[in-house]
Amino acid sequence: MTPSTESFWAVLLGPSEGQAPGLRLHMRLLRKRGRPLLLLPCHAGAAVACLDLYPAQSGRARMVRALLRALLKMGLPFGTEKIEASVSAESPFVKFLCSLGRGLDSGTRFRDEAAAAQAPATTWPRVPTLGILAGNPANDTQRFLVLIFDAQQKPIAVVKTGLSERARELVRKESSFLVSVPANMPGVPERLAALETTQRWGFALRWSGSRNTSLAKVMAGRGGKNRNLRDAGLAAIGSRGSAGRTLARGGREAWRSNSLRCHSAWRFRALEHQGFPPGAMDGSGLGAR
Image (cartoon, rainbow, N blue to C red):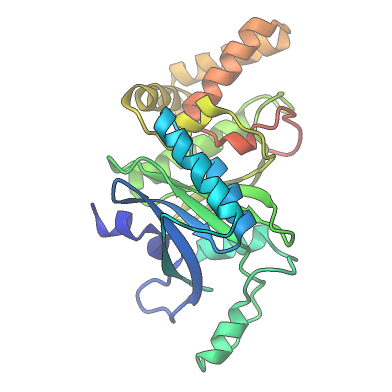
């Protein structure tokens, strides 16, 4: 297990070399087979909502998730461990997350911690309550989902990102796919915003709270068959070659012809290949891309 996999939150949210120490956020970590799986906020309701990110595939995993959900609702975080996550005000990714939660009356202000540490105070907006799901750690395409909450501790958006070069490229292709499909297509997630820097690619989707187990499984990338299917579709859709153009053109023609069977097959297969999180699939498909 690489250091970045073991403490992904430090790489995603923490300061880079030479930057000032970040704000310390108390969170809880859930592991699976010794590997970090879910980083949960301490707020019980928000922690329960973060469990919807995890696509439990086996009966045993679903039972464990249901038990953990019940315990968290009672404020009993059994099976998790306390950690402190460092959050840097200078990180472009943290700035992106703060922009999604701008105007919130809850969360933690950077200036509060800065004053306590005798550091220059900042005027950054509050860091929104968040939870993070780590995708399949088996290779260098691991991606992460960050669930963002509003002032009432309700999930409002989910951000997808990656750390490695290959993971960032996949995220870039997924983001490009969202803006390439026909506008207002039912079931296509709404892309709220995108982050494009030399070190980080990410995009945010509106969170509806709906669930779709098959999409969740593919999103997490846990299972070789689903992962191969997803990556094959992703390469075709994200490419600029004939395969990508043919798939996109075929999907648009099916949509325009109003053929429900062809439209549904293309739409959901494409979305499964892209690995979109279940809560982003609200069925409306309305809004800006």
